[in-house]
Image (cartoon, rainbow, N blue to C red; front, side):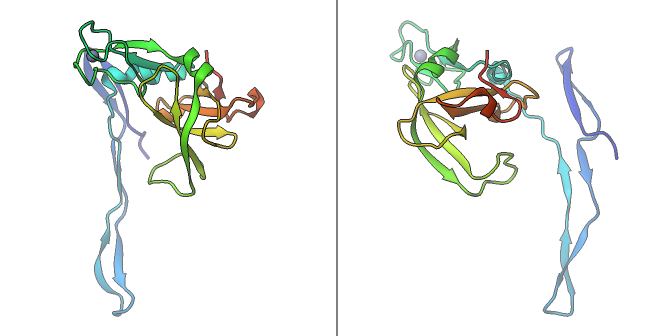
Length: 198
Ligand SMILES: [Zn+2]
């Protein structure tokens, strides 16, 4: 089996190594009510998708370092001057200026509470989170937006104070590197690879 595809950038170009497309054997689809008449085939194939993060790359890199970044509009004549956004918005939705990246780690530790939540017994295709997933909507003092994430330790309830945790060992560089625990959680209770951050 050839090596799974990997990518890096050098001289401002993507350099690809390994295999980005894998096909395996077709299997017949037969009708068991009609003497196994052939109806079609399964068409198994997998492919690797290159997902460029662009201006959000620093957000994901920072999660792996135990830091939570948001952005803020600093354009003086904008009606939304000094509004802070998390999820990270590259541009201000009101004036379209490029936002300033701002470290929200301490603010999140000191003031995050659960705005609302839902517990899902099943997940969508390709989800790597264990079920049931405790999805939480989070309010952080001074942040204009509500962040959606998931609770790893503790039971969700409206108004409960939570702390951010980060997958600083073997990070995935995806949004699941950020999770939350109720504020009474000890470091020994954190999931594998997670820490309270920098
Ligand atoms: Zn603005």
